[in-house]
Length: 128
Ligand SMILES: Nc1nc2c([nH]c(=O)n2[C@@H]2O[C@H](COP(=O)(O)OP(=O)(O)OP(=O)(O)O)[C@@H](O)[C@H]2O)c(=O)[nH]1
Image (cartoon, rainbow, N blue to C red; front, side, top):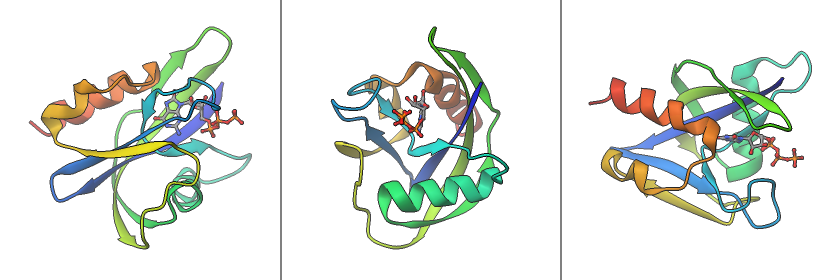
C-alpha cells in the first residue's frame, strides 16, 4: 500500500484544489496537493515538503483528518489528509495544470480522484 499525504489548504473560507495534468496518472482528476511518503519519513514533514515542491509555498498544519484507503485496482493508496494554511511564498504550480479556490458548496462540482471522495465528505461534515 502506498502512503500519500495531502493538504486541504484553506484561505479565508476557500479551499484549494489542484488538477492533474494530461501527462500524469489519472489525468485531469482533481485532488488535494501532496504526494508519497518516503521511507522513514514523518508524515507532517512529507506534506510540508510536497507542498513546497508542488506549489512553491510553505504551510502550517492546523489539523488532520482520517486516513482514507482506496483500491484503484492496480494499486492501493492510503491518503492521509491534513488541514493547512499558507504561511509564506507565492503559489506557483510546478506539476498540476490548474488550481481553484472553492467554497464548500462548490467542492462537489469537481471530478475528484476517487480516493478523495471520503476526504471531501469528512471535511464537509466537520465544517457544516
Ligand atoms: N497528491 C495526491 N495524490 C493523490 C490524491 N488522491 C489520489 O488518489 N492520489 C494518488 O496518489 C498518488 C500520489 O502520488 P504522487 O503524486 O506522489 O505521484 P504521481 O502518481 O503523480 O507520480 P508517479 O507517476 O511517479 O507515481 C497518485 O497515484 C495520485 O493519483 C490526492 O488528493 N493528492
